[in-house]
Length: 220
Image 1 (cartoon, rainbow, N blue to C red):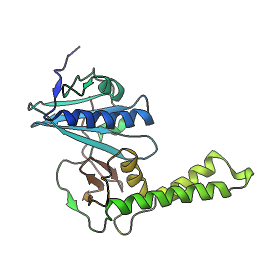
Image 2: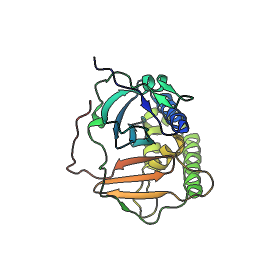
Image 3: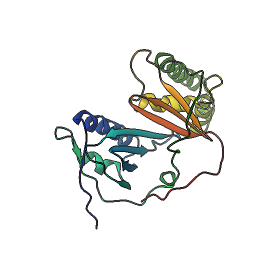
């Protein structure tokens, strides 16, 4: 079995930020896997929290220009992070889930106009949660089923923000993962082919908005 050298972060705070991200992923799925890609002194960590139907991306700067592309257990990677030392031990590779073989493109992104600031995005999520609770509470007993509640949830979270094409579920995912900045700080929406990417200083969420022929890269 190949033993990978530890990853050393350029700033110990980035180790803590990655640990916080992995903790949230494992909260949603204890068996979560993440794909790691490193090169040129940068690390990108991709995960897919259940139910949100998006890819979550957290990046960090590394001390060394490590070349790495491997899929590992999110929980084991979390256990291997030493925040005080600013490093992470990379666990053994696992068989990658299907999503890990289709990642967003690295280049070709263009800005999409019309996205509100972080404060308004949080307000949109809060309004959607309140609507779901209200409609769920109004269901008669005979219709209070998992299927009906899922239908209401899909209807609400599939709504897009204005003309951006970004579904509310992507904003909900960004908030749940701690990616939305405080206050009404600006956030960016980017597009590349069939992909949309909501990018903030704390991380990104990406999703495909339409079927398309995409480059499939092997997941280790």
